[in-house]
Length: 280
Image (cartoon, rainbow, N blue to C red; front, side, top):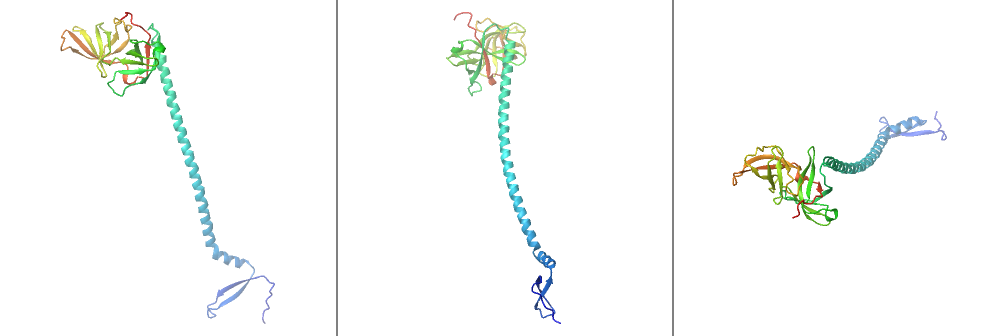
């Protein structure tokens, strides 16, 4: 009995190779859709999975790229912020240092009964043996030639560092105690022996014309004597580092003096508004 096919019945058609029928393709009618869907899914599943995986990788790649771009921008912003904060920190540290230096100076210089003015170093020659600096105060601030110039020394008070040499309206030239043109009447604190301090154009100064019998020794402090009409008495200058007999004038000794102040790193000084006591 031949089976009648109902054209209205929903069927799925699948072609399969039948090896027992001379390799002819036979048509097989499969009722329902589940088996057909499974076969189609089985055939195309690897391709669908590959496409889905590739799409996911592409999407993740762009997400990672955008994340790295944002991260780089944030990193650059933080670097700039760190540089700004470092600059501000250095600025406030410098302000604090200057404040402490000024506080120390005014606290320790109360015994100096002269008006004072603070000046900033505005120029120092590059030559390490140069004995001059330039400050930002001049005639409009009351400065005159030969006025003493001091600087603070941590733990030591204040010390003499030079003398005003030339004065202009807004600035002045100062010769340091290491300059060969500088000289001052000084004394050894421990012995009271007097001598003349002169610059050497080096790091040290020379103390000349010490008595041959002087008991001066290494480490003794040197002060202004106050007997040259230029500098008030008792200003610290430096310490003795060596003592020798003068080979030319055997009746005298001379000593090498190390200034208490680091003259090559000066930034603030204090000018005593003191005129010579004896008109020249």
